[in-house]
Image (cartoon, rainbow over all chains, first blue to last red; front, top):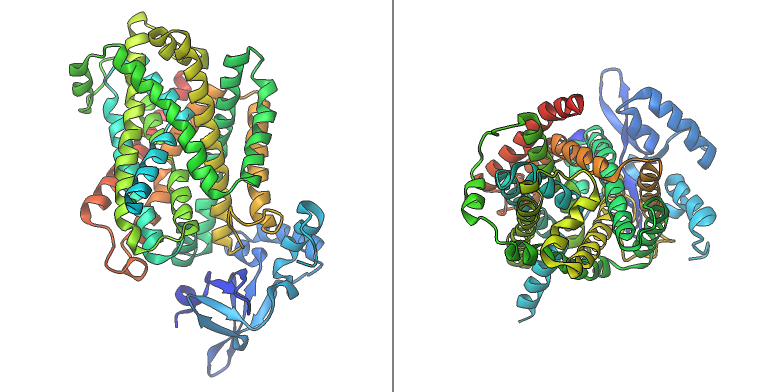
Length: 117
Length: 404
């Protein structure tokens, strides 16, 4: 599997097949004398924008932190992912993660979608 | 029988949805300034968009994916963000021109100044996208757009010089005002080859759950629908060549456009022009706003869909809301709709390769299309016309702006 071609920017879905954004970054750990190992993926607009421009990403990170309360991009362990039906699926509910924090904030504060649906 | 009806509906809606403010204004400017001489640019633009539309429908039907989805996956985030940035900047200007076009139609019809109509028209467009279904927007508004056939009726009634029209189909160098000639040619190409059209079309194919069984329908709809659509643009150019060119008049205001049909058909021609302009621009407004929302939502992996409850797909629905608002503000800030139309169409042409070239790479990737990848003809036509449009645009836009 090629990380850039087959993992980065692929669609991510949750256990209920709800769209959960895309894989914006891949975290690789390096160990002396051993091959690099993928340990997690990142799902965050800040990570995506950082691939284009660091300054813009820093500004976006501050905005994201204000809305989501998180200071680091959301990560999912590599072991929790599996490739199925042209998407990477993780074992969890996207609504229980910060991935959709902005979507939920907009539903609650702007579009008025009932919270229990 | 069902297939025949689908093809018929697809062709009819393609024809009804073809004309918008850009194609009407640029074709009229071409006819007023250069008679029949720029007919080739309308034909080139129509052939290119027909190929692109067929490709985008084929891509969706064969791969089950939308174009932004595949662009992000195949070329990565930075390239995708570059395409989004260019598309958004150019398309928001085009959207402003379309909203301005609906307001101009109402100004012509009521006598009330354009600025009072911009905000209500933007709200109406937003309301239709928010409440309407994809089918309503795709079919309903486009069917109403068939009123644009008035341009063909008026052009034929006006007694065109068919010999000159046939000669205009062959590209020729200008005999006067060369910079303006190429600038108008570029604007005509930009108006015909609008990238939002194929993003909208491919998203529609996914919303309508197309598969390889739809390839035949797709070919007919793209080819014949766009062909007849281009015929409407030629009719506008012919009318301008008959009505405006002999009097040495240029299209300097949208009022000049209403003379095209009014001179030939009288008062009914005026009201049919008002209806055609208003409906065509409203339809384009809906399609552009939705296309940009599709581009963002599909590439960023959000839930999307015009048929979803907009309150639930909040990021998707707020994207088109903000885009419509920004475009309306551009017009309210005092941008002249005709100038906005001209510059946005020329910029569309100049930026064509940014979206078209990656799309052509996708169309030749058998991982997505299997045995249905592009042939050499489709590749050559789209590549040559879009690169030509960019080169002409990059050269003529600064010269035209400096000259004016």
